[in-house]
Length: 299
Image (cartoon, rainbow, N blue to C red; front, side, top):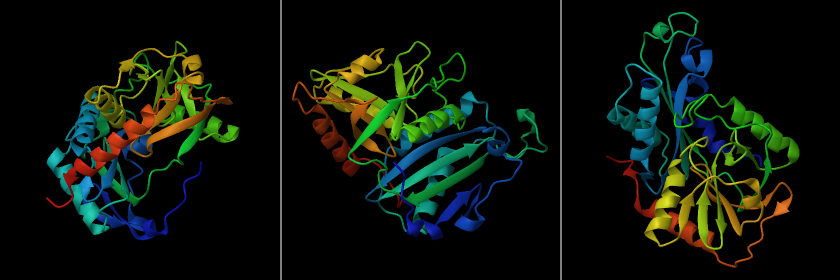
């Protein structure tokens, strides 16, 4: 699945550090920690009908990630929110937009790994683009040979920019002609895909991998809340590939793609033997939330 470039994004304004820049001039220093070592945290946020969806949850996760990495001089949520609003207003974005929010440790006085070289505060990047959900109505997955990081190595609770293992998994999916790649944890259980969380539904019960090696995504959390509030059985536990192969329904969740049905994994078609349309109900409830929730672009 290759995303199509939207020509409307040619002339967007992008926030870098403390001001807006035209797309062609929006740059970070070669001394920035994101360049030097992928030393940054990020969030993906979607805009629906004049509202920034789940902004408070995304900012909480960003602040937690920055704190876990020991960032200094982190901008406040109020400052970040104002930068987002200024960026959206400058681009005339009220709906159908996606924000890639990045916070780096900042510029270094000289190249090197030591965070004590960072003397200039964090670098905030607000990249808002015209971008609809990125997936078709259903997608095909393969299983990657690349394992998902677990807390023994790099904790997925930190929403960091070190994404090379995910990128390697995506390369495998590209070569296999699939949309995404499932990544297993170090014990061989399903963790998530290279970019989104994954669920399966068996006999009316919604099942999610435990958030040990996978990112506990914002949309993933919303799905669990929707299930609990609507009387849909939901459980987090270790799940094997076989349980996904033989599930009635499988779907992925994430800000970029919302809730997307999986039709095939490793050549196995996902067959709804129960004939229960649980995913359709969850998708409907999720769409309702996108119409009701959010931080207004206009303060």
